[in-house]
Length: 366
Picture 1 (tube, rainbow, N blue to C red):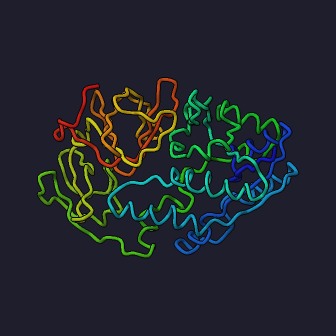
Picture 2: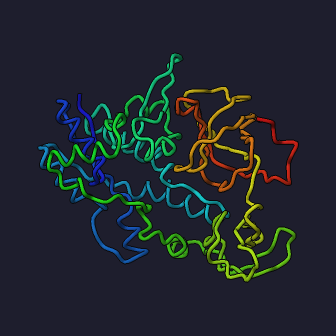
Picture 3: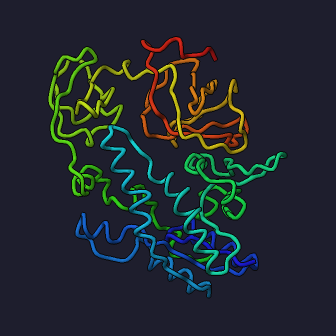
């Protein structure tokens, strides 16, 4: 079988290529060039795709073919432009989730097929399984701390049949030790925590340099609408943010809401972030296709311990009701539904939170 390995130049994708090569598969290394022109234009940083030289070096050491595929136009249209639009709407998008679904495991998979490959593999820490009804689904694998199933809930049934995660049963520490045992220089390479097209996590700077004017300064108000300060542009703020408000207060203030049409930031105390429920949209079904009434485990952030919830379906929307108040629920972020075995049942995008003092009729007992 001929397998393409999407190689970033880091530890995980390099070891995925190593393990598949050692297992006797015909492996081809591929690196997607996604954001070189964007980074050069916005931050004056020239260079090849991040990690391309390292990926090429690993491929050469394994004696496998290596290709750099230019997907910059598609990446800009499908990922970067929606990312900026979401921030300007006062939402907090997760571009990595969209990139996995639309670029890595869609467009890149199709390019791999053009190279004669039957499957594509990556270094993700998750597994792909198939239910008794024939549906493919993502599940947590051997790694629990750096589990990446949350980032993969948008994958399609068509793509999952041709995806391999060679590291799914291992932990990060195990993979690093395997790399050290093989003398790979990437064994000590640190992980990158930033978005590939925004160096140093300079989100606001990037958005301001993107065509389409970013909103200017505006009012910061309390929940009742009283003006208590001024902000520097809504794209510089996210729900739950504490720093940077510049408002004197006897108690810490947090961003509790973003009113994009009015160019207004709403600030309040910590308890004003509490929510009893949330409403999700853009649902992608994995192991389950019927969600109404299900009791599930839910993650609204990748690093969050899963919490219990009950689902209620109303057309294209799913209401997620919690037994106790939850914080950190941000429109634009993902909410992923699991069963007790940490298998992904489905997931969606958070449309809004239902605060403790509103919408009680929409909140169901868990």
